[in-house]
Amino acid sequence: MRKTHYHLSFLMFIFLCLPANSACDLADYTRLRDLMVKEQIIARGIRNPAVIKAMEGVPRHLFVPSKYRAFSYGDYPLSIGEGQTISQPYIVAFMTEALELTSDDKVLEIGTGSGYQAAILVELVKEVYTIEFIPRLAKRAQKTLGELEYENIRLRIGDGYRGWPEEAPFDAIIVTCAPDKIPEALVDQLREGGRMIIPVGREGGVQKLVKVTKKAGKIKIQAVMDVRFVPMVKDDSLRDP
Image 1 (tube, one colour):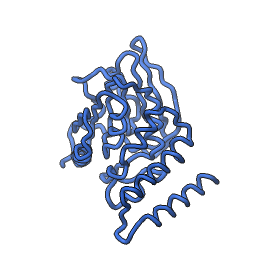
Image 2 (cartoon, helix red, strand yellow; image 1 turned 30 degrees about the vertical axis):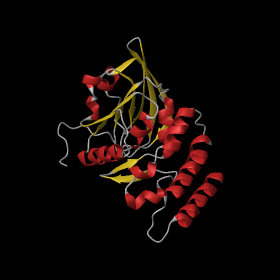
Image 3 (cartoon, one colour; image 1 turned 120 degrees about the vertical axis):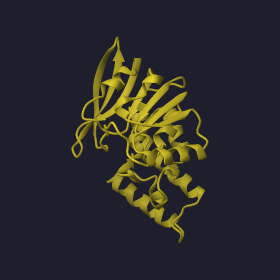
Image 4 (cartoon, one colour; image 1 turned 90 degrees about the horizontal axis):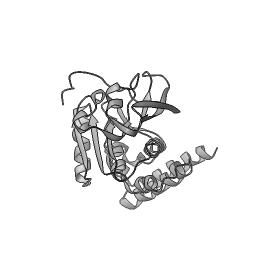
């Protein structure tokens, strides 16, 4: 009941903040972001202060296509084109917190998408390496991250199944698309003591978000929750821009 009430309140706020040209001003977006953090992030149990601060600070609406921008802080994923989505805010916060990141960490992200998750990560860690399969999305994300002057993020267009071997090992790996099984290359590129959060399962069905930890060269897999993510694409050739 509380969640339904929140959705109605959020949609009323959206309606009231939108002028005739369907664009909120900066103050409106700030209020929406504050409400998102309070109702979707903190209320659902996210406790890491660094994660909360990042969610409060990163302007999510700038990573969303303009036609959906007014809905950027809603409790749902949104289309970013090319059949891809920007994840629900809570899922972004949950996966980030699950990695138990430190300020010295080097992180690999598979599935750059809009660039929002990379921006959240770089608020918490030393370096972020992010891979996107779809050139159009990669170029758009690079542009957004550049305009916002985010540093220490390196982006490449490529096959996420292969990871980024020349920059391995990584302290943490986050995967924002779902393979049928955990790619061995990503396990190999995880540092001893490293953590990986990844959704696993077939397209169209319920997938399992799992946390992988690596100790003494072996991995421990812990199922965390049921999720739905876009599939992880594996191909030797990239799509044309």
